[in-house]
Length: 236
Image (cartoon, rainbow, N blue to C red; front, side):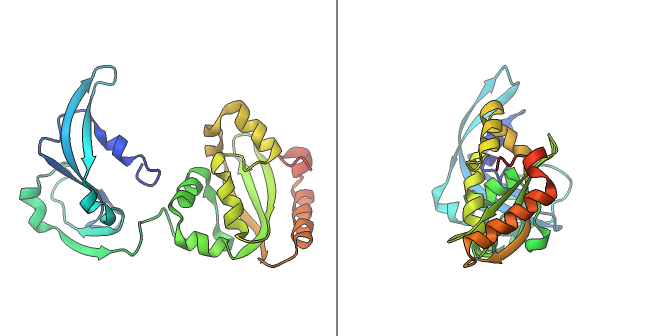
C-alpha cells in the first residue's frame, strides 16, 4: 500500500476506534528485526462510522513539518507483544534513530540487467518515485525487452533506442499499453487494471548510442524466435 501511494487512505479505515490520541505516528515494520520505516505523522481530525463497510473512516491530516522524513527515516524499536497500536508516551523513549536514508525507500534496488523480472504495479511505483538505481541503469542502455502476460500466456517483444534508453520507454507503460497496438486493444477492452498481470524483463542490452537499425534488427530476431507475431502481441 505504501509503495503504491495508497497508505494514507488504507490507514484511514479502522474497524475500531484505534486513534484516540490527537496525533498518530505511522511506522511500517521492515524485514530486519526491530527496524521500522517512518511513514509520517498525522493530526486526528475526527472519525465517522460507515455502516456499509462496518468500519470507522478517520480524517487524518498529514503534518507537513515532518513530511520530508517520510520513507527515509528508519527507527529502531523492539516491540513487546504484537499490538498494532501503542502509546507514544509509553514507548517513545524506547525508539531511536537507526538511519536517515538519502532518498525514499523503494520496492527494491536495481538487481542487474539479467535479473530483471518486474511486475507492472511495481514498475508503476518505480516510475512514479523516479527510483534512482532503476533510472540510472535503464536510461544508459538501449535494448530489447519482453512483456509477458501470464493471463493469456502471450508475449510482446519491444525495443528502446535513443535518449533515455529503456527507462524512457518503460515510463510510457504506466498507462498500461505503452501505445502498442495490440496491448492498447486489450486495455481498451478490459481497462487499465488488466495491465496488473504484465511482467517486464530484458532480453538484451545495447549501447544507448547504437543505431536504431541495429536494435530493430535484434528486436526482429527475438520476435521470430519467440513467435510473438503469430502467437503474441506483436502486430508487425
